[in-house]
Length: 425
Image (tube, rainbow, N blue to C red):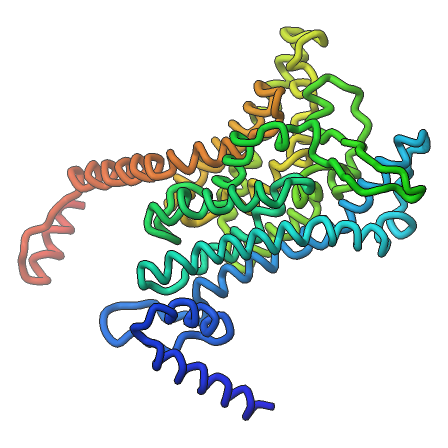
């Protein structure tokens, strides 16, 4: 077995060297490095010795996303049948092993969600390969994570042709025009989501996240649509989901945003594997809590009455914003993007806090589309370099001020220097 593996690796290396300089070389190189580490080594200059590379770092993020994807299969099927039962006048009571973790739910969810994943990867990587061949550089690994994120942040009923158009736009305009992976100023997955929101707003609104066109078990055509949790609150409707339902994810919503519990586990995995910044995550949570507390305080003072269109989301308990909608998903998997986020330690605190703060603010003041996390992250992507610039300037000024007050000793013998120091003291 090991000899066969060695032979395959050797032959792939030989083929790669034979294709060097040809147009197809970048495409083959991407396949080769996906299976094995590159055979090139650094011959000169300073460099970092490490066991991982960008592709394997991306794979760690995908591992953190897989539980969310798997859960989405079950939840998609469950929400489908729950909507049918509710329409027939018999609301479904959740039973984890009785009517949630079932093959029926899994298969329906798999059939609905997997085409989104396949199209996302096929189109996105196709564009990456085309640009690599045209420009003559290696295929970049950045879309490995973007391809998984995109289907998790859109409604499950998004038409595939819309997804194709959005992915092409996001990869070309959001990344390639800036120079590719590592050069983009906006998160590519959120650029795709923003394109869908502004180009096809009726499909992305909070009142029709789950629309299914299957038939129910009696053979009756089904066209039931269900609002998200935020959609209910934005319209001041009676809230019907428990805290446990929202935390564990048994609620309607975009494909991968519903389970705050699994998102939390994914975040901890990325923190302990040093893939994502805990500073951004913690500060974003603090920012969302601060904005939620301010709105709750405004309601408690009576400045906003129940007749206000903002009342539903303003009166929503401040900490529940973290387990409703896509805020938790955005904080863990989007805000922590190392390319588009702040790079300095202090900048990460500021960057994350403003993301959480603005996310809740946009939710409340935009009732037509009560989800602000992707807009907040894109806005802060633009300001991240400015934040780092002023953080660095502040550090430079602090050091210059310290230097001006420092005592500079003249060049002298060791004995003389020690004497000068003693006299100074």
